[in-house]
Image (cartoon, rainbow, N blue to C red):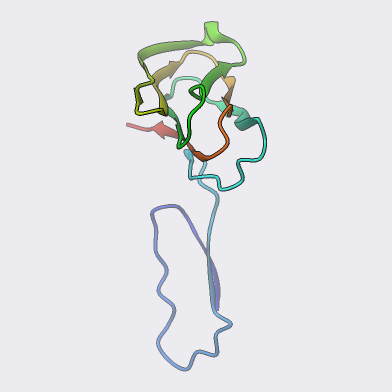
Length: 140
């Protein structure tokens, strides 16, 4: 059995003898990217580079970084190909420091007036920690 599954949908492998060759593959999700990154050796981590944001759509954009050692806080930069094509409805930039552990969160809710591109850049100035980024298209 081999089947491609759209995001949010399921496929049940039929009952019966199964030799381990059956596969279910999720199709790409046009409305989201996300996850964590284990490789923190680079000083600049770039996500969603040239990701197209569609006209007339709303997007929730998040970038997160956590430093687990002393040092400067991580810098998160959300860039649009043409910022005039995007209306930022809500924006929150939060970077607390507690006992030399630095965090930085950027969350934006945007409405795209005309299609444009998106890039999330995280300048990793710390030697250990984690990063996450999420882009979700909000469809009515």
